[in-house]
Image 1 (tube, rainbow, N blue to C red):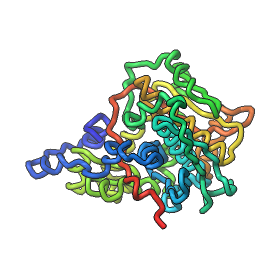
Image 2 (image 1 turned 90 degrees about the vertical axis):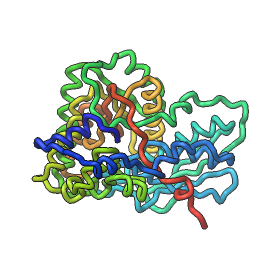
Image 3 (image 1 turned 180 degrees about the vertical axis):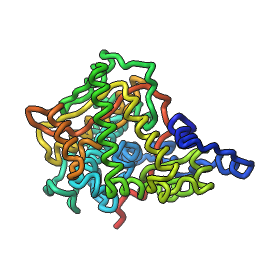
Length: 381
């Protein structure tokens, strides 16, 4: 992360002033050495499946858990599994969000394969599914067919540029209704909705702020996030998943002991208080909102939601628009039930499942999120 408003809030929250000497100036220059390499290496493998997978690795996913494992033992096929060690049992007890992330992975795989002259036939959950939780059965089987003359998906060019914007948006730059309409044209499996009306923005800023507050004030859901903090270059390189905090400010704060998982969990600490300011700055600067509703809530519906979501994210990238999921109100644990009901009454009054809710706006394009290398995600017999 670069030194931005979000990071400055950490620095000045509570009135703290940090004076770094030469030693801390050196520490502050540290950046991850290996965690970002998959972004540079995408597309370099000549084998068609591995080449497409190198782009699929870059797909958005909840808490950057990268919950995918693939089996390449069958020629011309990729069998996708969910990594049981990368689930979010407290905030995502039914694995719905993880499944959406796996749908993002599959759609990115399909888009990338089209640029290598391949069509991909994807069968979700070929051996059946459990609606309550993901298990050891395959999430999908993807078969590659060489078709050199087949159309190439135009969103491919945006894959290396795609980001999830986790910074405040510029509140002086409104998003036009025409741009919102352009964004929705890439959605084909779910019902797309969105608004940039001031009254809706104000209402949804409040709702998403309050739902986020519930997640933070519920000990087991907040702890789930804090346990996934990766603070500083060394932690990010060692575990390039979860929620990364890198760059000059976080390297320095970590060296001073001012930012640790312990301080993040302590509601009396500067890190906790300033962290709240930082995350609420995101919900409170939304310049519009978009959402996706599916008619059902099967695992196949969730995979299809992921396909639409990654396309929305890629199209937003093409349009120069920032986008970030605000999924707290959609989570299925008891403490969130009132917000879950409110969101469904608002966006799906006649039935269906609100699968995604996100904010949109303008901001500088952030750095890419860390990624595990492809070989760590392949099942080796």
